[in-house]
Image (cartoon, rainbow, N blue to C red; front, side, top):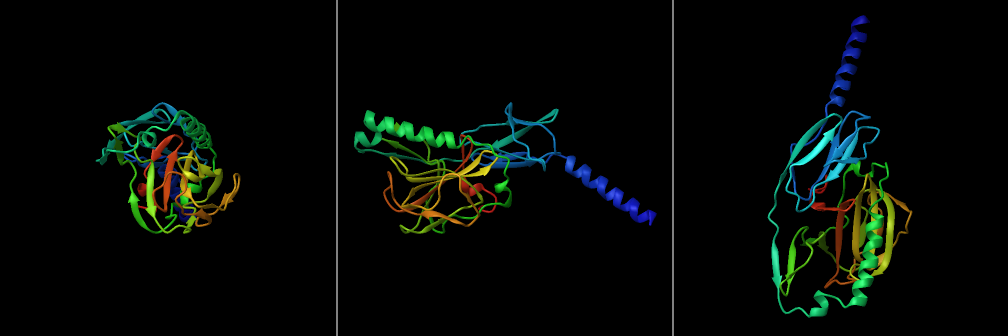
Length: 263
């Protein structure tokens, strides 16, 4: 009996020791989500900014498209450097585009700015929910017609890199939640992105779905992974039916293709 108790005690101590060892990758890719683990109660900061640590010791942060690294991650009293692997971002040059399409008139530009400010505000949520922890599934199944990070230069004017992944599907295709979460934004008529939904997964992580033809959810609603939130479309400035799936860690845009369960 004493031997059994001793063995159980040793196993418990070993488990505690393992839990106390920080789990953090040495190298990450541009555009990647990083999920790390520390002993519960450990304070964590990324590039000097404190980040949320769950009761189970999990924490997350995102590495932006243009991040060169290394990223300094402070775990308690120690700091680790995470190297960043660069990616090759394609650039497409398009000439002959109507000027008002490249640079909208003042009234339209003001509308776009107001609408985007509302979207940005919805991304600042920092709940302690760990809806991201079970991984992600594809919101629709189809051909990838646009990749994260690609950039276009219209008439010599560089535009922002593509902020997400486009998946070509027929109009009306049901769009499913890639992970559970809470709806923080839903608007059927934004100028650039048309039907737009933001789904918060906790810890500052959120998915956004653009150009939807139908929205089946409302702000404050909790949805489960795989639940239908709307339908694919071509609303806003879109040339054909598709689903734009974007993913953020607060204001940092990440590549959905690199999410756990997707890659």
